[in-house]
Image (cartoon, rainbow, N blue to C red):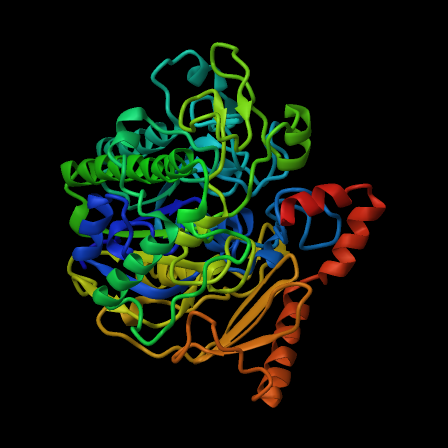
Length: 539
């Protein structure tokens, strides 16, 4: 490698483990599939189960509680839960400046508490030379709230452009960054963070993209889960001996449901959202080839959490949704009211709808695992991870070594030679929590370091083949990940000593990283009159 590599980090939003084509899904993702074909797929990579915490962990190389994003971007008060990137952490672009990198971001930020006024946690205050995207976590794809360039609000650009669609805008801006960098800064390496909001609700998509999937999900979630599992097994990503988890007990068999046309339309729109993202990734790759930088660029793709089972209820007043779900746009660009809620009388996709795809389709997205976004069982934290870097990674390889988000920072440090600092602007910075993936680029490796999670009281630790996991407020469960990664056979009673030992180590980690017990968080929020908000966020 004669010069510093460029790095493109692509993150998408609320997508399950097995949605994209190269991970067994029905969605047509030819560009991601080609990256996987000529790069690496990791079968056991993990996020942190939720949007903001995952983004904070990914961009800093720390656990989310160490960054100020203990839950989401609202201020609960205690250290680690201020809802804002704190001064005691550094970001990837800040670290890379010492190696001469220019940094660009296009897409969703969602790690700053102040959505209107630039503060020390906005992208251009955290190392990015240029930023285009949204500060908020969710909203209309046709009229996104907090749309920003640099520090200037540019929502009017979307309102005045009848062809505006946020997924396309993220892709096209990223492609423009690549071209502009090659033109204006050809002698510098670049880091680019592309953070899509697709396929996070609301279900918004172009009709021509939705039409591609007409009938594709008519077989229903039960049969499609079985088909996905078989494709995952054939691909070498999942062991055939691992049982498919049961359908969520709250949901009926697909053949027993009413409103099948509406139900399948939900999944068709969700698939179209991912399809549109992949089209845009193709345009970014085209710009990279045009600039002659494809061979010298490491591309990483992953998702921020598992598929999302959150429901958008019917009949909820827009003001309540603004306050409870942190959404801020409820009118179309031409001023029409948005029809909010999962109402079978309303087909999703158009600008004046606001729906989510629901529990059973999230169950499909997370095939073959249990549970969803929010939870630290495998369905909530398992993500595809694709690493593409010509000549530096094995083409078409699969890696089974476990890893988690701080490893991305550690890997970037490794391949660029950048040094992780011990302070930022006079504030002490904890050591990077990640382990470099670079040793696995040529062959699979063993991991000796444990992995830890906590979100809203849901908690887990993985040490080698053993995983300790808890769904709040339940007891610890124990699984053998080599024999039972789908978490079907709890071994806690048989190995009580191991449970006690691992739980003690998890608590040591939680104390070190500033995790606050959920009971105490609930008490704090209740004292502030925010208990209803908390319950809405954690359903």
